[in-house]
Image 1 (cartoon, rainbow, N blue to C red):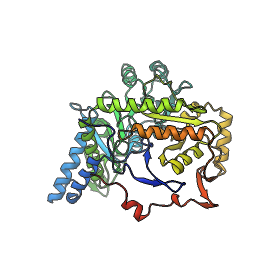
Image 2 (cartoon, one colour; image 1 turned 180 degrees about the vertical axis):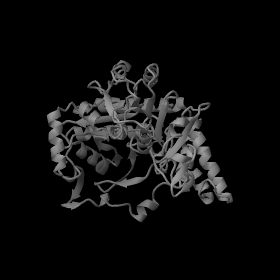
Image 3 (cartoon, one colour; image 1 turned 60 degrees about the vertical axis):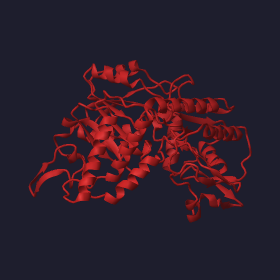
Image 4 (cartoon, helix red, strand yellow; image 1 turned 120 degrees about the vertical axis):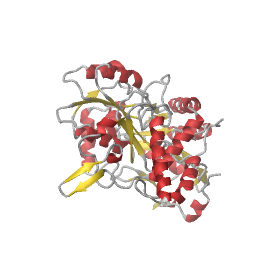
Amino acid sequence: MTTFPVRLVGDGMLVPCVDGNERPYVALDTAASTGALEPVLRRVNEFLPVYSAVHRGSGYKSQLSTDAYEDARQAALGFAGREGRDDVAVICRNTTEALNHLAYSLRLCPDDIVVTSVAEHHSNLLPWSRVATRRYVECQPDGTFTTADVVAQLDRSPKPRLLTITAASNITGWLPPIDEIIDASHSRGIPVAVDAAQLAPHRPLPQMADFIAWSGHKMYAPFGAGVLIGPRDTFADGEPFLVGGGTVNLVELGGVAWNEPPDREEAGSPNVVGAVALHAAIATLAEMGWPAIIAHDRRIGRMLRDGLASIPGVRLLGPDLHTDTLPVATFTVDGLSHGLVAARLSAEDGIGVRHGCFCAHPYMMRLLGLEEDEVTDFRNEMRQGDRTRMPGAVRASAGINTSETDVGRLISAVSRIAGGAKAPVTYIQDARSGDFNPYLNSMPWSGNTRLTEDRVSRAPVPS
C-alpha cells in the first residue's frame, strides 16, 4: 500500500534564501513539470548499460532495447485504455509535438472547421491555426463551460471535422465533463482529440477519445518522451509528419515507399530512454492505484484552494471551492505584481511556483476579466520590449509528493506577503522579461546563481 506523499528524486533538497538560511525546497510547479519518481530513475539506471539503437539491429543490446521500447509503446496503449482497438501509439517528445503531429496527419484544409475552446493551452490552439479554421467554445467568467456550450458550436454549420479539447485546465485545474462531451461529439459523427497533458498524472484517461496526447514530463518521467494515440488508418496514408531514417521501407532517387505506422511516424533515432522512463512511470502509478492518487489530490487540493481563498487580498481564479478540480490554485494578490509574489516566495521561503499567463493567454485574459483595449495596450508594450505590466497570476500546483506541510508553508508565506510584510531585500524588475530579482546591497543576490558543486553534493539522493 502506497503512503502519500510519495517521494520524488530531489525532494528535501536545501535551497538558499535571502536571509542566509537554507530551507527544504517546496515544489509547487508540477503543472509545468514534475520531478522523477524514484522507481523511474532506478529503471533508467538499470536500462542504460544495455541501451542501443532500436529496430533492425542484430546485436544483443539492440534487441533488448527494441523490446524495451516496444513494451513502452504497449504500456502507453494500456494506460490509455486502448486494448482491443486498432490504435497506434506514436512516441514523440511531448504533448505539443503530438498535437502538431496530429494536426498535420489529419490532412485538413483551410476551410475545414476545428472546434476547440478558449480554455486551451497554446499547444492545442496554435497547431490548428496552421491547417484549418477554428471555432471556439466560450467560457464563463469562472473559466468553465458546459456540454451544451460545446454542442452549440458542434451544431453550427458548416459541420466541424474535429473537436479538440483539454481534459483538465493547466491554470484552474478545472475538469470539463470530458466523457459527456465526447459522447455528444460522437453522436454527431465528429471525432475528438483530447489534450491530456494535465490529466494524465491525476486521473484515468478518457478511453473513448479518438485521439489523445500526453507528456511524460508531467507524470514523473522527465526524460523527454510523450505519446500520441489514434486509429492506425489515420497515419497509414500520405507522407509522415517528419521524414528520414526509420520512416521508410525503400528509398530511390525518384521515390520512396513509406513504412507502416507507427514506425513511419517516428523519424530518426527515437528516445528509447524516455520511453523506458514513461513505461516505469505508468507501472508505478498503476501500483499506487487511481483511488489513492485521487484521494490525495483532493485532500491537498482542498487545503491549497481553501487556504489561499481565506487570505485577505488574495483572489483565487477559476470555479468555486465546491467544484472538484485537480490540485491547482492560480491566484492574484491585490496591489502586487504576480512576478514579485513569485520571486518573494522563492527567495524568501524556498517555494517554487510559476507566474504569468501559463501558455494559455486567451483563457487568462478571461479569468482576469480584462477588456480588449487593455489587452491591446499590453501587446503593444510587449512588442516594444517592455513586459513590466504584463498581466498574469501566480500558480501553485501539487502532485503525489506534495504534503500538507508544503501547503502550509505556502499559505503562511502568501499570508505574510499579502498582509503587507516588508520585503527583506530590494527586488528589481527586468523590463524585458518582467521577472523580479532580489538584490543585496545593490548587488544581485548570489543565491540566484547556478548550484555550486557543494550544494549539488548535499542534495538528497534516492534511497
